[in-house]
Image 1: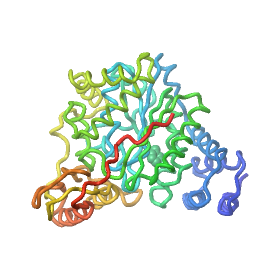
Image 2: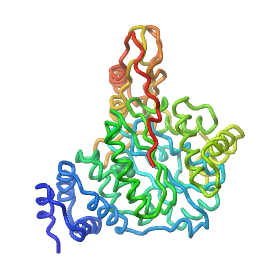
Image 3: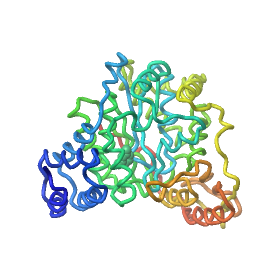
Image 4: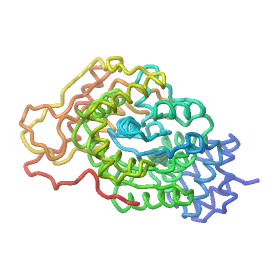
Length: 432
Ligand code: URA
C-alpha cells in the first residue's frame, strides 16, 4: 500500500520515486482511490521538482496501463499514422491534416483532448459541429477508420482514463506547462491508440506551453524517446506560437477555417503547416514514398477535391453534419480597427487566446461549458502593413458588452510600429 501524502512530500523534497510506488499512485488515482487534492499537490511538486527520465517513462506506462490499448495495425492490417500538437492558439491543424492524409490513402486514427488554459482543444472544436460524436466505442473507431480512412475521437472507451482525469485536473491547478507531464500525457494517448508513425507538432512561443526553442527541443526529445521505447517512429515539428496560427481563434470559426484549408483556400501560414505535416505523415506511412512525393500527393488531394470529399464522409460517419451553414454563429460581430498606420511588429498569441477564453471560447474551470460560436478572426498578422482605420481583426461575441471587452483585448494584443519585425518562419526545426 502506498501512502500518497508521503510520495507528495518526497517529490516536494526533490527525491526520485521508485517505479512501483509512482505507478501505484497513478493507477490508484485512476481507480478513484486517491483524491483529486492529493494528485493536484503531487502535480505541483512535479512542476517544481520535475521528473527524471525513468520517472517520466514509468508515469507514461502507468497511464497507458490505467485502461485498454488498441493494436491498430493488427485491427486494420495497415500501418496507421497519427498527429498531435502540444497545444496552441488557433491550432486547428489536425482537422485539416486528417482528411488530406486519408484522401491520399493513409489511415489516420486520432485521440484528441479538450482545451487547456488559453489553448483550444480539438474535441471542443469538433463539438461545434451539430451531431458530431466524440465518444465512439473501440469497435466503432476501428470500423470507421477502415471504412472512411479516418476518425478523431475523445479518450474513447477505456483508453488512458488516467490522462483524462489528470488533464482536467492540471488545467485548473496551474500544472499544465511541465515538460514530463505534457510528454506523458501526449505519448500515453498516442501509444495506447496504436499508431505506428506519429508526427508531433511542438509549439514554441508566448502562446505555447514551451516558451523557448531549448525547452521545446527537450520536450521533443523526451517524446521521441518514449515513442522509441515502444517501437514507434516519432518526428517532431517545432513550430512558432508567438502569434496565433492562421486567422481564426474559437471553435466553430476554426472548423470553418480548417474546411477552407482542405478546399485550398485557407490562410497561407496555416495551409503551409498543414501540407508540411501531411507530407511528413505520408512519408512515414506504408505508401513507401518520400516527403517530396508526399507533398505532391497532399497538394493534389486538396486541388482535385478528394480531401474535401473525405472531410464530408468523415463528419457524416461520425454523426455530424457536413453542412457548414449549420455551424453556430455568434450574434454580435465587431471590428478591431488600427488606431495608426504601421506594421504589425507582434500579435501576442497568449493575449488573443486569453481574449477568446474571456469571450467564452474556452473554460475557466473544469466544469465550464463552452460557447462554440464566439471567437476572434485576426485579419492582419505579424509583418503586415496597415493604414489607420483599417480592420485588424473581428470579434464574434455573445453580447455587446463581451464584444466591447473583446475589441479592447484584441487591440492590446497587436503591437504596431514603424519597422518590420525580424522574420520568424513558422516551421522552426524538425527533430527526429
Ligand atoms: N496536449 C496533451 O494532450 N496533453 C498535454 O499535457 C498538453 C497538450
